Image (cartoon, rainbow over all chains, first blue to last red; front, side, top):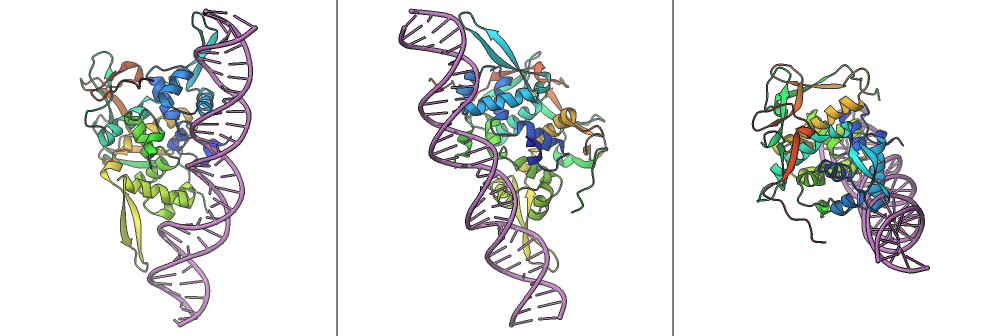
Length: 158
Length: 158
DNA sequence: AGCTTGAGTTTAATTATTAAACCCAGCAGG
DNA sequence: CCTGCTGGGTTTAATAATTAAACTCAAGCT
């Protein structure tokens, strides 16, 4: 079960995140969760993912604490389960947003995006912004530089 | 070659982006590109990815216009090729950043992140911020709501 | 008693991924 | 001008992941 080890550079946080959400379908399942879909059948139908795969993906998402399995009972039905985002899962939102923004910009259709995410309070469209702690906004990758942090490890002496 | 179609909900921009960068290793290869690694051997060694897979991933990244293959010649060596991020590729940065931030917060080691990304001009640490066009900052997924955009399509009449 | 439905499992066939071996061009040394 | 080395890949065979389709199972409805 060392899924993590398949993505080397094992102390890289991006690699660790991908070990949890980087398998095929996982981020799309989470997208559905953000859109409010909570039930196996609904997710399966809208995504078209294989049923057994959806079952195992949901299980690992629950295992990693991104979704929670909640029992519910609809009138005239037996008890069933739905999957709700946890706080930990909700914090994945910027990843989805970054994927959407890039897709809209570079792979979008003529007629515009199928979904617009709005600020609930004011209705204005939201977007991701790269900022620095000193208050500069609107940065791009070119304005940044990676530096070793406190947890940096020396490369493996081959 | 309908990679795209494997990720249903075919007009979803997140799904389209994942069709390009969502295969195993692709985002880690791009991470290396952002760290300045450009050569096959270097990427292969630091990532530990299978060589044939790295070759095909680099080829699809070039095909999609995220990397460019540039010839170069080191003194005493024959011509070789390196892979450089294009503008299109550079714009993937928020995706990597979002993955890193989540990993740092939820899967990080005691001793802190191995890498800190700084604003080149002022040295302050950078971060992603969800903002709205009306100027509100520091939003979370809970402050947002998705709405159908101009390109929305009705669900398939099953 | 038999049919339906949501939520999964199981099974068998198809793809992806891996490790390891191989290839190739040119340069350097002898 | 023969040999070995290096960067940058292919090929091959074995292993693992993904798929579609069929099956299960427990209520509840008719």
